Length: 424
Image (tube, helix red, strand yellow):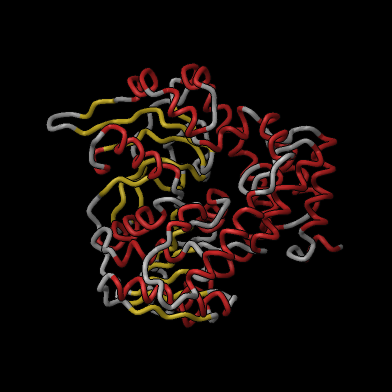
């Protein structure tokens, strides 16, 4: 099969190819097409990926192109991992909100909205062009942030798409390690929206039944968990659940803002890592994944993506945490919202698994952010200053009229080069 990666010049890409090289899952890939407008990056990343495959004895061929139609033609699945504006735009997303005392982050708050506004129109254009050459049955697996909003845009446009994040698989692998069990025997009660999720259960599969070890984890390993997610032990006990580290932006907003004002942006740090990675990738003597790639982020990205595509192509009914249309999974949300929950994956797509009733402390925040995401998508698709301001006013990390107005002006000024409608 042919697998196409849009944004294939990313320094993430060798992580994915390394997973294919070591044949994670049962995916039989014979061609990997890396598509990216940055031909200089492709000229470095593409040959390195080919060396990874060769070193592992994998027969797949890597092809690089800046022509989307050529790269997507004949693809069974297309992975979307692009970043419109690069790290410089990300730096803007992470800094302009701080001027108003709001968290600077590329997937939530004002920065997340800026990224959605830049990204959604580009992804929708890519998806239409992919469908024209690859056909209606080609799966789009979206890893592009903000994953929930971008995936909802794809679904509303009628594309065959699922969203993917590495938060759940990161927890799964960590729990398996500290409990001494195989990862495939760990099942997470993972619930929420992308980058707004909690683990409400950690079930370990036994010979006759599954046992929830979350209460024991919170009792015996609360300190380790708290350090991993950056939140206090007392909060974990109050919630009776394990929030993802992205919840820190909500539960400790003011503390995070104070920290961010005294630190380099994550974009600056990542840009330094990327420069070094590209230098390593360019060395023809290097044919193994460098340890430095672990500092780029996206842990277990290759495993999550490959296993998901394998299930979509070959079936099997495995469970994966994905971003999918809500339907009736979370009854307090509209059916067309996109949620991040465990689903059974087969060749027909994703079927949400049953979800226990969500307590008000979580449901209220989920509903609040889901309403913002609907407004954010409306702004990304249709444009207009008022739509941007409405979305910011609805976001729980903004929520004040004066701040929403100031942030709207700052956002539009910083992104005028990407938003034609903002220039007028």
